[in-house]
Image (cartoon, rainbow, N blue to C red; front, side, top):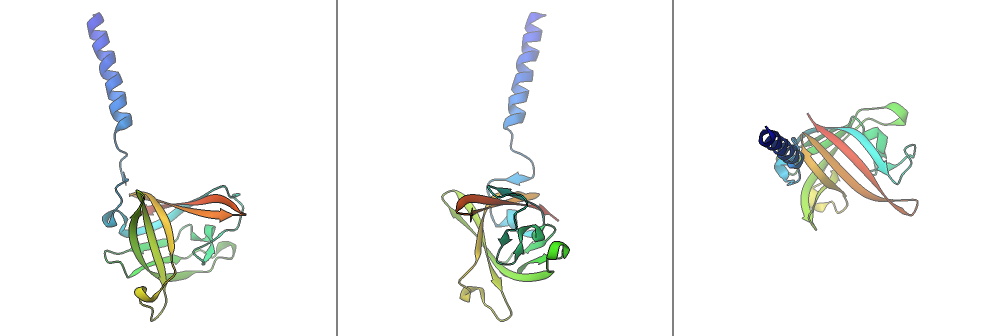
Length: 163
């Protein structure tokens, strides 16, 4: 009986470790174009080192909180992407912005970059844009943007859900 109890206990411990070490479902750290492409809804924004009630303008567009509920489209090709802010709460303006997007890897970190495209623009002629670190992608995608807030290092964390 003792051997059976010890064997059962040992199997339970192995099962716990195997479960805790297994990869999380729906999220990949090997971030590539296939993991990012598609339609997304930005569901949450959190700040690190920034007060929650701060008004932080992101992407030279609007207050960060205006982006909650925004729709992001990353098609298979690098061009033809867009984001749409539909909320008009708290002074947010509804807008649809065409963008061109890229993925790059630097120091083991995957970054999503995008440039705003206006009527007649060609992505190769637009020299300014935005970059966020892609922390994970799958059914949920998380971006991290390191920023300077009141002369201190801070970050904005964006959470998007695949549609």
